[in-house]
Length: 285
Image (cartoon, rainbow, N blue to C red; front, side):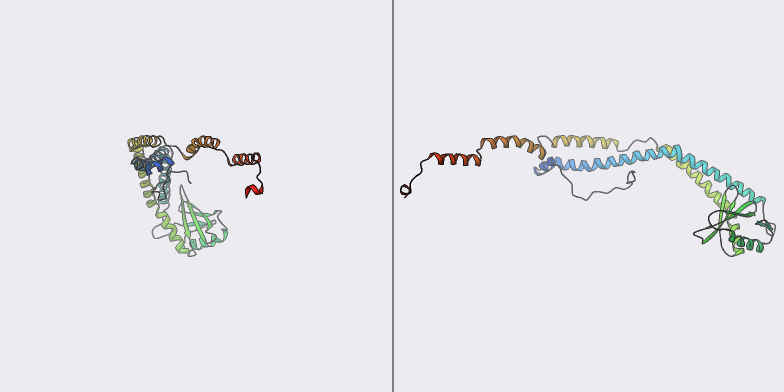
């Protein structure tokens, strides 16, 4: 239904539909009919495998031309973005045993408690998915959105990349969540680099697989040729029911015309009765 080749196959357990010629050959005990039926299954299976192989070749070609280059460039951009954001974070550190400060709605707050409270107070300005700019923190612009059908507030820290933080009602807890997301950039950068290495490896594998012929091509060719030969042999002197009826029709018409009809017999009997003299009652007695 998706126009794609199936990735799984199974044997059909329904009754096998036999042609008129196959039924005659089967009734006659012809061993070729079993060979033909086995070849039907094998050839159908091999054709499906070949179609899957061709589809895989098309996918490999498409991946090499479009998917891998696009994904590689995208992940290179992610790496550059994370590296730039990590540099920004390093340029705006917290002072020793202190707080780097946060700007919320035009106010620069150097106290953690006040910054957290101001952040929670900014919730009332947010009405939905439209981002509301509320300030900055450690070199990143901050905006708030209300998502999940009005149940969850999200803070977005925007540098070269976007870093999202789900917020709650606890002011100090929100600041901890923000720090955890920013400090987790190095881990995310490592994941992106690993993905880029994986993409390069997959691309090399695709290049090696592209252009390979169908491994069972010779088996398919041999069995298909033998199946075609059996189909010709089993249909020698065999006629379908329609063909048989077509040949029987002229003979039936000739036989019908040679045999006098019942209506003709009645006409001749009636004519004979009119020519014979009627007998009297005494003669009959």
